[in-house]
Length: 203
Image (tube, rainbow, N blue to C red; front, side, top):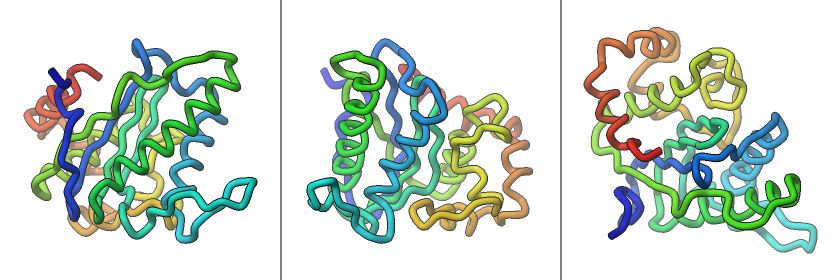
């Protein structure tokens, strides 16, 4: 029987919370460069212009098909908040990024085999309340979330900008100058967070 949230009919114009983890919960990021490579792979597919490999072949370009609203890679798992405009673009993005990252990781650390534990998992986001709380859950994953260098939080706070990260849909709900307070108020929404923990129970 398929694991919960692994098989989805990924439709267009839909938000998804996508997450994945290392095999047996092992580390998938061990140093700063690993995080940088993973983020640059996302930029490869989501940037404003197509990119090419060393042989001049274009990588799949998904900038108009899917938007990355939020992200937080952690030592043994990662979270993404995605807005899919074209069916199957989530699959194309995750397959491309995870395959390339696994090849990089295996070469660097002299290992073989799968890095990620099976197919990535995803849950549909049905309303604005759930959307904003998912963004909070993702950004609050690190205990010291204000100092975590690899999440999209600085883009929400106006400290960084990138054309491949799109915080605007969330900031249209929660103004930028209120976003930090929104994060710190998470205890008032314990029920929502517990629901998210259930969704990620086998993370």
